[in-house]
Length: 368
Image (cartoon, rainbow, N blue to C red; front, side, top):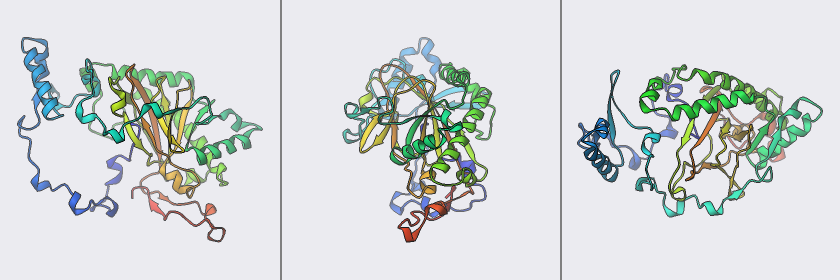
């Protein structure tokens, strides 16, 4: 997941109605009374894959083909601790695929147009900032660079960030090993409980290190806006931190689809760790720019909430993930956000009606 909203459990506690900004127009509501029920395999096929390894192999292959052709969905029947069915992960489906399924092909006007993408060579388009200078005589210079990057790019990369290289290598190894596990092994980590925090204990050290980096960056961004160092952090309530591990398998026709279409991040700030395979692209001055991986760096991007706090001085910009035909790609974003009840609005010091700097946004709670 290159973009993440709050977990639903963070939003619904005590809520007894749908917020007005989430209510769909009448013509676009679900009409639940008109929905057909999928009884058994009548509408959404249920396929027992055990037959792949015996005399029914051809029959199962034919059923999978028909399901893909006529439904685009199917369920795999398994027997495991009360869970009777579970959809396959993408890693289970791509082996041997030599074309993009028709329901994943984007309209011609919405394809990546990879030949028109600019390359970010060094720091020419996406700045690379050495954070070591934050703790010495170059402090003001580094703060200024961060401010310019937030204002003109919405993205920047950081080196000498303080997260140990061994911690980075470990979390990347864990992600690769997890996605390469057989399905039966991956299922041992499966949980429907979003509050369960022990599914991958090994990432705890990484999360702690990234949290420290994030807090240093929030202090630097506050300073770059002319605010007290603790201002932004102080607006977040109890803070929230969510980590995702994204797997993008090789794609036989990368020009026809996306790993993730263009979007902005709704949180405060995102800290992205990517492997050595390119995939992230950022919209800059109307052109998509490929952010090539630099070893032992993090990519930082401004989220929607930071744009609000800065009163539009800093921008949350569109970005996307593309795929390639040569190899798999793994990215590990950390989404840092306010608590649901935190009140977000432009910093008062950045609002001045007499100086033609009115508040661009009204105050709101993050859960709204």
